[in-house]
Length: 471
Image (cartoon, rainbow, N blue to C red; front, side):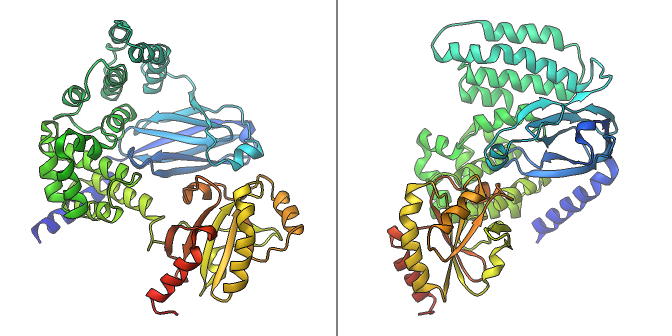
């Protein structure tokens, strides 16, 4: 009861804090090539899951003029997707920025339909920017740092002894140490740490001791979090290889014990700070969901225990974001909703098939594996269409290719095209074609992923129906 009261008090204080310290940021400018468009500004809610959070939507008038306000309580990394560009800047509470956007260049249709297309990163321009402005400092520092970074790392991995990393650090510090800006000072410090880690100048344990042990956690500093994510990547596996494999595995998979996991990890003297240990556990849980070492059910149990016990608002948010990210494709959870067009122009969602099971699959009409299985899907559909709906989401670049294909075949189940929502590929983590899922009448995932028709899907489907007493 006492711990619950403490948690409620912490959340109450956290809820009140923004009203006290929030600062409003104003972004304005004139960009005629964006006339009558809406510009959306985002930030990452946290830098472990990289969950996007909309800060503001800015309407550009017919002359290209725009102005919008963002509410933040500390320095924030803000970005916007503008055609082929991903523009970003750092904003400080209480400031006004007259920004300069790149000329608008829309994505080609192939780029738009590719959910993995990477926009060109561009540091947003600012009119009349002072030399001590945070954006100027970071932009000029990154330019000088990156000019030498790749070469130094390559030399280190090739076994070439070099003092160029130390020389680069000394040269940059001589130029930038005169600027008294805590965020920028930390940004430089953790960039140097990243260089030392990747250039094999220091062991990981030494890096941990110098840069993270008993140091404040800089949740919103990209430089700090990049080194943190690299250093503690798949930490549970790394720690296991240090002679603690049975303990870590047992704490998570067998015992589902957050308390015992903390006791085991405390053997790492870098993690004597509870706050840092919680962050490392959150990172470990996040990574653990994407490999096959630990049971996902066990990881969720540990995550829920951490969520119930932590008193740190940032960790509550990260835990929520991890849970949301990893459960969207777990059996028993509802996947991301979608509405896609059929070949006759009808906008359809899973709600069209209420009361039925849905065998959802992602295919392309140019995939030999997909074409092989279409004849099996047709037989499956004719046999079970009273109970089972088959829905194929086509990822053909042009919906006309799908239309032409269906005109030449006699397949009768539902075909949809992903064109109006290409991000559905990421939502369902599709990495190969075909990929299958079985969804229940309540819209919850039953088999994720599901076997293909050639992998005895029909038998598994029958076994499931028998287990719940439907047959």
